Length: 289
Image (tube, rainbow, N blue to C red):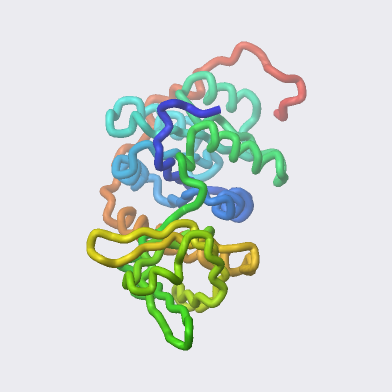
């Protein structure tokens, strides 16, 4: 389903202290499917980072670092901060029994739910994807895109009629990229033209790409711009490399924000509300103890 309040440009997705299964199975799957995911390893930085990234999602591994009582107080504390009202929180656990899961789910506003990890399988991956889709994590984006106008390690060129032409790469995704160039060569990039000899350098890798010209236009400054889509002739390794490059740049920018973030000094130890919560009955006889 789609929530009418979901942001057009999607949501950043943070995972706090993810387990090995989460980091190396779930997160890798989400990255491959173009979700904007980040790791957080310091609870003291969480609130400051989220305040700087409204409309984000936060999945907390409650099996690590603190007791369930403290995690309960930590999540509860979000409700008193206007800056964090737009954050969608979900809890993740491999160890919590049915009673503890019920306490969290029934007494906290968990917009992203409570995910109990029972096994490493497609069902788990689909569960996460379903939640992210429901909350519009991608927005209208199908692919993560990086503005490369200030990136010195992204460039391109192509040869035609015995001449070499360079162009500037404006942005890039694992599906394609936009380039700007002198309008004198606009005839090389007419819409629906198949271009097979375009050389693209991204980071430390150079690749010869096969592309279809999706669109071409003249810019007000007298240059021209074309949007090129990678064809299926390109190896999957090239798309994976571009995607990983984009994540490296995204993470580098986020790391600066995390390093500069103010630390939360709250203890979250009192009151011990969680242990006093009652559950009426076991909801499902098949639940684990």
